[in-house]
Image (cartoon, rainbow, N blue to C red):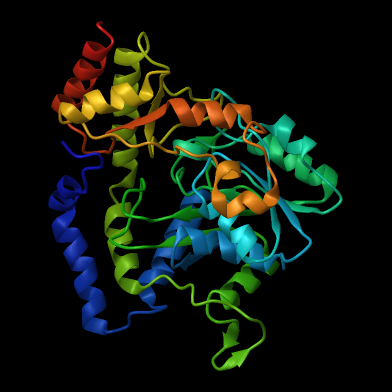
Length: 364
């Protein structure tokens, strides 16, 4: 049993993937070529954004987004402490200060009430994380942003394909970002990411910043980064994207099957009103998390913990001065969360075994 079954996915799509990759090899155009441009057009249309820019990772998508707003020392950016480090890491890399706001205990996304309480005169923007595969409360975030004249960057690195009130993740104002890390709902065969925006000014800045700050070859108007998506990864993504809608249906069915079978023994994921869920992770909660994980491992079921240590308790952010108990919901969830095998190619047989072992552990 595999935690994410990329082997079966490749076997199913091999001919399309090789065809797309071979086309790149024949042209020998590996950076900023036609495959990347096609991918940007198709994914921008999919999420409902005017512009899309392929980049080298989801982390660089976030970094470029902050750079496009000129974020630097003295600026504060509000985000969640319960996420992968990249979200806050990029804030610190620019010399700005991550300011954490605790999460909602049901969705695990940033709590808008706590978010607004964190606003100060130094706040420049908000990065809500659409965690585990469903959108954060975008409407509340945009209301707060409008009231305090802030920008919003959706960290949709786990939620590409998800919807909120009929609009897709990464298509909200002001910027959306996603990751194409191999295990993501739409993943390439290396690192990759994308920035989405309908703001023409932001789009212009991103286009040059991802290419060493050059809008014209060898003329550098700003300090940028080498943040481009290569053509081979774009080719893989184009091949996979044609099957993406059916994969989302299978993910939704697998999530619903887990939840129906496990809701009486563990806390299963809750989908917020107006949301769809792409289950980048299928994460349950139990106070007996560590013992359950050990039991599953002993019986051939792989699991993962997303995330065992909240960011405010990470050594890298010790300088921020947060205390151990400053974000109690994040801390509690980090002690109880456990992710189960999930992918569009998760077999019903494997799911049944996961379910059987969990119920066996609880004596059900």
